[in-house]
Image (tube, rainbow, N blue to C red; front, top):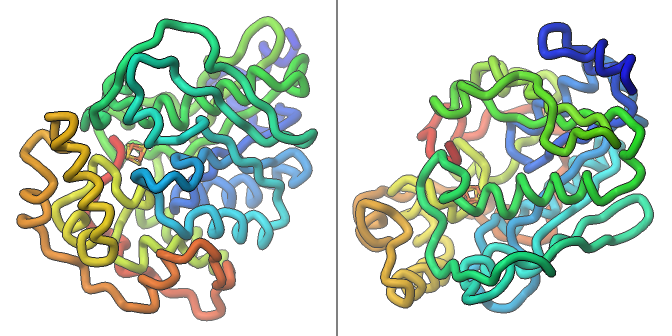
Length: 328
Ligand code: SF4
């Protein structure tokens, strides 16, 4: 371990110096670019695994944030590229955290090569959320990113003995171009789960890439992008991301009005709006729905993703180079 610690520094970073390469795979274009880039560099497939952090959990009738097709799309992608895929999530997902009242943060569930594991959710001080995550780069107030993705990943690493005594690389797809906060991220740095027991580094291989370079690698490999891009979204995150633009909210209102009803009800119950500049109806009124093809709506709204990942005649989706609304 010590020898490797000397070899891997942020100045002379070597992605081949790791036993295992975990790629945080949201299904968005930047995470696809990370996978393709790692494969192109020649990182052996048997070292790579894709991790997808689910934002929603269960079918409770509560608000669901994510595109219905995302689970199926990431599975189809992993199958098409012959890579293992593990899902992880917080019990009850976004909705349980949103409605949490005088309760502990829910446990984390994560798939592993040896089956499903569970950790956390038993210590701490009960507290209340009952408001939407704030539109902020600060992850302590924008709790969805930390509670439902970043912390889930750390818990899944630190609770698997298979990473102890090993060198693990966590690859994520943040790009400097996306926001001034992301521009400040290091390209490579020790991950917070790195300790005396295990070496874990985080690497952002596409940090300096332009959007054009990202689409170019998808085109070279003929990868069909996530359906959200074909509806007009330029970033693929939650369908009802708190950073959504007025036109995205107007588009959501057109294809799934039930979500708007749920959000409006929560705003009234909490006495706090989702956006800082007014309630959800105000945002919708300011936007213009994207010109959405009905077949693309069908694919995005279906839980069974049924299109091939490799496109014979590759097409740039209509959302490419569009509004840069999304997590900062
Ligand atoms: S995509 Fe938006 S709403 Fe979803 S977890 Fe990230 S910041 Fe929160």
